[in-house]
Length: 385
Image (tube, rainbow, N blue to C red):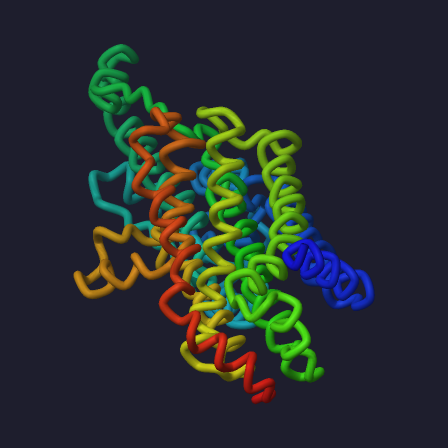
C-alpha cells in the first residue's frame, strides 16, 4: 500500500506541475520532430560554390555544367577573379571554389599537364566534405576528358578508349544505408541521446524538488523509511511516461521515416526501455555522489553532450586513444549505439547483443552504490542549489 501511495503522490505532482509535461513529452517530441525535419532530405543538396573559369572554352563550360549537375553542388556564381571568389567564401556565401586555369584546353591538347584547383571551407565540416567529394570527382572526370582528347587525336578507337580509361568497372553496394542518408546516420542516435538527457534532467529535478519544497521527510515517511521503495515509487510513473515517448521516437524513425530495422521492433524497444532506466540510474548515481542540484544537472548535461561524440557513431571508438576507449564504457549511449548497429542495422541474433543489454542494466543498478548517501540527503531535507 505504501508503494501504491507513493506512485499516486508522484502522479499528482506530475499533473500539477507543467514542467513535468515539458520534460517528459513536449521537449523530447519537439526535438524528435526538429531532427526529422532537419534531415528530411537525407543528404544536403544544392550547396553553393563558385567557379572561376579563366579558360572560357567549350571544355571548361562542360566542366562547369557537369559540376552543377551534381545533386549536392550548385554553381551559384562565376566570378571573374579568384580574389572575388575568396571574398565570397569568407563572407559565408559559398562553401567551395573550383578554379579552371587559363589555357586549360590548349595545355590539355599539347601534351602538357593542366592543373585544376579546388578549395573548400572545412569550417563547415559536412558541406565542406560533400563539396570536396564532388570537386574531386569532377577533377577525375576532367582528367578522363583530357586523356580522351589526347587519345582521339592519336587515332585511338572508341573500344580502345573505354578499355584504357576505365579498365576496371566498380560495382559498389553500401550496406545498411545504401542511400548514404545522413538522416539514418545521425537521427538514430541524436533522438535517443536527447531523450536520455531529458530523462536524467527529470530525475535530478524531481528528487531535488522534494528538498526544495521541504517535502522529502513526508516522502520518506510514506515509504516507511525505505529509500528503495521511495525511489522506485517516484521513478516508475516517469519510466512509463518516458517509455511512451521513447516508443513514439522508435515509431517515428522506423514506421514513418522508414529507417532500416532488420531485427524487428522488439529488440530496439527493449534497448530504448533499458536506455531510459540506465539514464535514470546514472542520474541518481551522480546525485548521490555530489549531493548538489546544480552540479548534478551540469554533470548530466555534460555526459549527454559527450555521448554524442564518444559513443562511436561519429568517430570509431577503436581508433581513439586507449584511455578514451575505456572512458567510452562509462556512457549508457555507447551500449545503445552498439545495440542499434547490431540489431537495427545488421539484424544479428539477439544472443550476440546480450552483453550490451546487461551493460545498460548495470547502469540502471548503479545507484545501489550510493543509496546510503541519497538516504542521508533526503533525511536531512536540506536543499543545496
